[in-house]
Every structure is written in C-alpha cells, then in structure tokens.
Image (cartoon, rainbow, N blue to C red):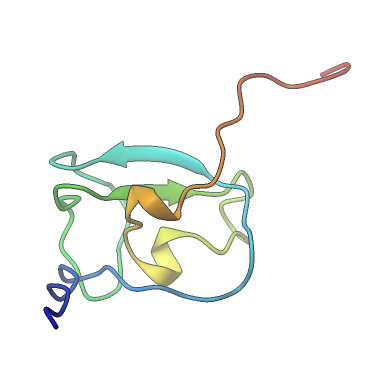
Length: 82
C-alpha cells in the first residue's frame, strides 16, 4: 500500500468542521502575514485563506496553507442587501 507524500511545510489539517474563508493567494504567490511552520510563499497546490475579521479570524495564520480538495464550495455573490 502506497502512502501519501507528506504535506509541505505550513500545511496541515485542523478538524474544526466547515469554515467560510476567502482565498487570498494560490501556489507561488507571496503572503504578507506569518503562516505557522512555513515561509511567505504558498506551496504549489495550496491556498492561503483569510477571514473577514482580521483580528479575530481563524485562518491560514493559525492552521497553515490549505489544499484545494478541502474546499467544499465557492461563494458567487452575496444575497440580499449589502
């Protein structure tokens, strides 16, 4: 049985259920915030995600870069009044 390759530095899975986040960078992009266990460049095949409330959000600054297969949906637009 073949084992999966280890994730790149700064990439790990946190089982907290579903989170709504905004993808702010993709593989090869630089981020301007610290990511635990990783450098400022998003590894290929991963995303950097952020929440809307920067001071209180649980996002890539806390749990690292996210593989896209962990994304379960995409927001197209806001419903209702802004």
